Image (cartoon, rainbow, N blue to C red; front, side):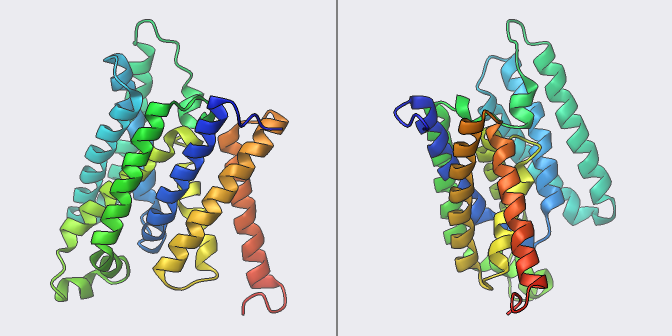
Length: 270
């Protein structure tokens, strides 16, 4: 049995629920705008901010948040101004960010930091302070999605048409990437930097097989995320497995199974 009376498990379950909300709200924009690679660049570059924060004696999540926003704005500027070189520049930011994080963590006096906890997540060490930060980020994301749902939707499907309708495409492009960066920070301790994109995109991809408009897709993605994280924690605890990797295996398997059912079984595509 899972010890729900223990604070660490309560924190882990709450973290999974909070992360699922962020993923469900932002995932559709990442999937339908096809910006998974941009999101991946942000996700991996934030290790640099975490390493610098550790070196300065600050909270690593604070450093991750600052670096995520800076990198998101930089990637947004590059994607608008130099689209032909976008992939190369994102790869450079990706590599430099991760390498910078490793260097600063290695030079931090008095710390013995397990890099695997950042790369693959360690949901069982999340603290109450981290939960408060995640809840605040969730609230910020939900507010942005609600206030700017129409322009976000417009630029997600037809940027040129959005421009003709007077939508400030560049501004909302930057804002969307900042929103993605906030979600990345929410997910770091849940599944780590390596697995962020899977949890950000796969629940949405499954939901998109059964719904066609954003509100139901978001709702289905949120519910799925909550189910996978809770079930993943149960399996990980009972089997003594890494929680983040267990969650991703569940999500990935669900996506493959859903895709198989929809495409290959009789009547599945209806």
